[in-house]
Image (cartoon, rainbow, N blue to C red):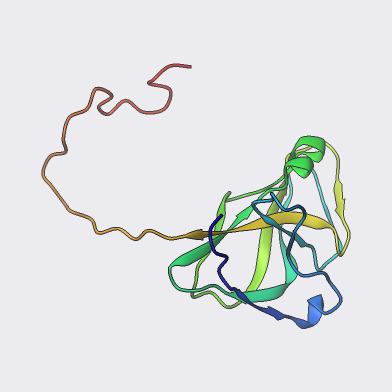
Length: 148
C-alpha cells in the first residue's frame, strides 16, 4: 500500500451538514461523495450536481471523478466525461456531471451518494514532433481492428 497524500478540503455553505468524502471499506479505491442538492434527472437528462466542497490537490496529482457501479447498473445513472479530472490548480466547488441513461426519472436527494473520487499521480509528457512514426504490426488500425 502506498503512502496517502493529503488533500485540503473546504466545506462550502451548501455542504455544512453533509458527510465528507469517505472510503466505504478498507479496500475501496474511491471515496464516496454525496449530493448537496435535491434534483430529478429526466431520462436522457444530465446535470452538474453540487457537492458542497472544494479541494486543493497537491501538485503532481489529479483527482478522478468516477461513477458508482450500483447507480449505473440499477438505474442507468452514470458520470459523463468519465473519468472526469479535477486538476491540482482548480479551487472551485467539486461538481459531478451525472446523466440518466435509464428509462425512468431518477430522483437525487441531498446527501445521496452520487460518485466516487480517486486520487492519482499525473505523468506529464514532452511531445517530440517527427516526420514519420515507427512501424508496428497494428499500424493505423483503429476501432475494432484487433477483433471483437
